[in-house]
Length: 566
Image (cartoon, rainbow, N blue to C red):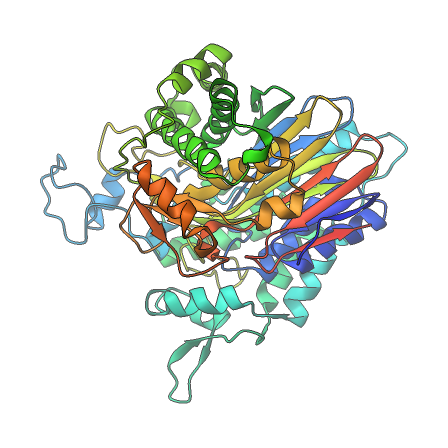
């Protein structure tokens, strides 16, 4: 049985133990939680390549003592050449394209390969902006740790090798036929059978990534800006273009991560923060706000954690939140009035009046019918807190498992396929256009309780991220569970899982029996998964800091995770 780890000092939680340990080492070296998170982000990119990488995007929430939380949007935009016309020329588009050209390949952006690598990788820019914020707000007498120290463990693991995880083997096998055909993938992430055919690396096999090690060493020496405006950028741009991607050096040169105003929802004992568009952070906060409304309206007691009423309330709140999300969230530049006005519009949906109106539409005796087309994606969430009280909630992703599958030969960078979130049809909420940001399932959360506690929490899992975050938060804040118990307890997912077309309510097998039957009686289309701890339900984690200096950390038994304390 797993237990919440507790201590006094700093704490890190990650879906791979080596990442949590890298963060802990930085805290022991005198670094703060922001610096620890950069070390963790670099390490997880090496040791968990099927879920994330430096060729992807990231988002940050940072709470420093005495300051309001800040958010960093490290999502890269579509390339200047990434237009409907560009894809039409490749044989991709919609049937009524004004060119009249017949479709050769299909009506959507290709899911793998160079044509799916159409957005700038923003995560390194996010590291850069987070470190700049750290420097701006740190004690003038404290020297920041050098990049070489922050990236040391990631470089070591890339050079020396890491043991392939069970999930990496499983996902490599699942997508072997497609991924093995992508440029550079087989050479970096697959083995060979006796007959010379590509095969998935087995769990425990040693995975070395020397090219990626050289890239990280280059960044440590030349600075993170080299990824966008230096020698590394020039090499990557040339290789992206040669492979057939629409990305060019000018796209990399023009990118910078942004500090943005986070969204927040006021709950009865806390404020919870998340990211605005292009993320689905609004949905996570709406679910939490609606659950508080439903608890007060219908008398859901503390003792009702993990009961049919608890689950039904969260599931129905999820439906209301997703309906709002999918009518509104798109690239920030497409929001009416621009970025700040768009944030204000999203924030209005989190007002007490708006939440009260939405809650009034939820029937606690019957499920809303739910034909729905959810988004997909995999990622990692990590959290860190330090002895001074800085707390970070962070998320990083290449979208689908292994992203585009394309690995750049000289740098070893595997590029994301986040651009699949765009629509090739014109005049849609998320239509493709140069410079636009794709819709993101990524959304880290951070809660500031009125009693002084600060909790960073989140998960991977695409469409399940808001649902799992709501489950974890309500179990801790409303139903008295410990961090580890809240994360380990059986979970659910409303919507389609990877490779499945059903939109049923999926329950881990530990919820079958009376719970499943009670939810069916409320009108939910219930499907019980085979696994007691299903990878489908995400890899959650949490760190909490108490006002007396006590720290707590917990990670998900569904992952290869770890919680490390100083």
